[in-house]
Image (cartoon, rainbow, N blue to C red; front, side, top):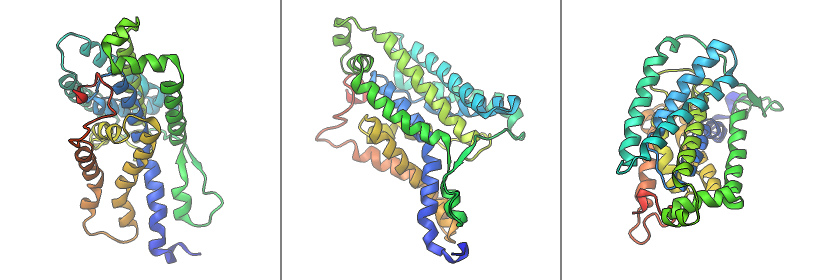
Length: 308
């Protein structure tokens, strides 16, 4: 079958490919924020981790020729920013939300300042796995050209589920997030656990940022993230703090983000920017739907500021 005769039949393929690509950074950032919030701390500064990771990963990939080294560097950059967030939030009477917003601005500012020399140079990209090699249809081959980080994200979601529900460390993390007094009574290191969780969340946000600069869209620019770090917080709420639901929610957000380009690909060019706003509309709808008066944030960790 010739690709030009497919018409609207290509729309599901385009949505599938777009959902996979767009959802990948959401998977990493949301899982990192989920672990952070399970410890009783919210990190609204993930946008800064994401953008800083995107810049660091792209710079290292360009300078070394190794995109995977860039991914690791992006994770480390995000982790160090997470450490800073964790240490600042450990000070008494410091507000997590205010610190998160401040670090978001700082992270994006540092990324823009340090990343100016890398806007024009082309860095090596992350390789993709051509799962559609068997097809003669270009749209199908493109939809099934999947980056390895997507599969790593799926395995990570399973690993986070096992960690939180089947390990002693996971039980300690959940206890710290549900009841600080109870955790202290059991001898658990509350501050150390929260700092470690925030560092882990920052690491994953950095890795998610490296996907943006090294795979899709595959370049470094100042408007790269489009608020994905902030939307990940709403995604975690929508997923009710469960890793496998966060995986499916990320795919939903990815499909919403791919709607505009997919429709443009089949010739629907009107209202293009309106369709591109679908992820933000979805975020707003989720926040409204998640705040019912009957049971507001019923599944949230007890120590999380959203719950109080």
